[in-house]
Length: 151
View: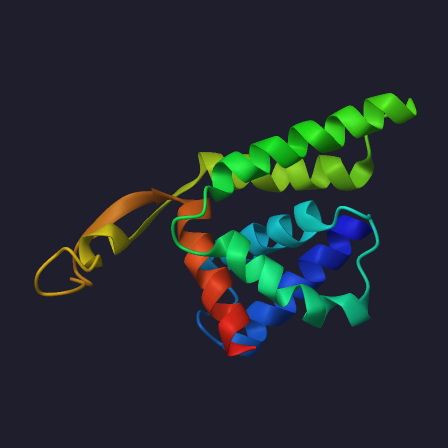
């Protein structure tokens, strides 16, 4: 149930921000990236409505530009898997859903604006016509981050 709740929170944050149409793969990338951030940052395993607002700052820092988000995701998956083995429990259904979302995010590439081309070191700013194939999670991170700012 924790994964579904994380996915619901991510969906609401992105819908509220109205950054991108809901029916697009880009929206799915943002939702899944944000849901993974929410789910994997919940160390106590107790996502609750009251804590959502108090955790926005943590989620913002995890999705900030330059944060090693991909490495953090791998580390959290290892930790959660180890905790499940120590408890002697089988595979957690929430963890399976999170892993499936990660597999899609990591293996799917979307044709999107080259965000790297608009870094401050580049003269002229962002060229929105410069497109590259980008892993879905790399597109989802800034979408999720911006959606939280707009919330």
